[in-house]
Length: 480
Image (cartoon, rainbow, N blue to C red; front, side, top):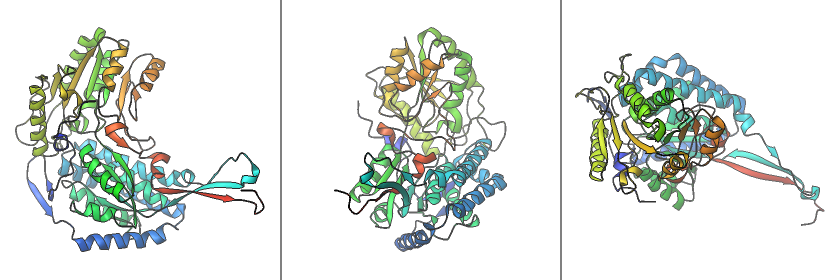
């Protein structure tokens, strides 16, 4: 597999030293800045989190569930307040911001309902009764450090704190520098929901604080969502400190359209799957892989659907294409496209013109991504569509797997059994048949290869940072 370009971290959700600030991507106006946490504030947060853990770990599942339910109720009650903040800080369409707020509430509700069952003790079958009565218990371990990105500011927090707090751990958060108010409002949310002080805290941590936090013996692990560059840095620190880590990193999801697919519907889903959240989604449908027999028809419908997108004020209900999260994100994506062109990529402007004001990015279609073009292995974090024409199913699978990433993917076919068999051959953590990759409260999320490791949500997520302890009751006279 070819190596990634050295500027990949710059183009993705990088782990860079930047000031915490609210800058409206639509207007470009910096509205508020926040100072980095001091070394003493970090130490105080660690102490408070561990003190909270010592009591929170013994709180019943029912009492923890009350807090999770209260958090969900507050998000639903104050949905406008929460959604507006998402739109203000990272430019998300207001309607999409409301959906993200609801999704976050659903995650809290899922663990309020299911945490106790997911973590109940398990009786283990033993080959010989003399081995004893063996059970596996799942117990919290301490503080989990969460490092999260800006593209889904609430969902990213909810999908780590809801399971970990429900398990009895406590959480410290380092959020992205451009969504400081989204991070802070979750502090207020959890306190209002009844969570003990210190059990969750947002920190405007400086980069060097990551090593300080992970080297602290009271911290049991780190959950990071971000670029593969950021993941490599943090995983190395965690490994040196012998701390568990989960990594949800970049993605370049394949969107396979086989010759027997419903072309009209597949093309419409492709346009949606590539452009929701302005294309700033790790599981966006970034690589469209289309069978030769229906390629021309698919492309015609796809272009027509993209042409319907309207860029503008993300608070305006008629807007369907948001700005990118910052002007720097738009500039970096433009530079990445120019670099791809140097490697031979052919780039075509598609869709209606976007405003010059604001961090907007004109949708682009990229072809000629031949085997010697390094750009075929890059993640474009914005509305840039990579398009591949393939002769048959076998070539579609080969192209889908020709990537350093392995997060999500889609297969479109009228024969769903065939779709499942194709999905089994795609090396990713998730594949959807006849639908773009989704994010839901009751489905697992995670990938393989350079897309990271570990899983979030459902039972897999709640068990990532607990101690799976064996307790075996053995007759004192049993042989060794």
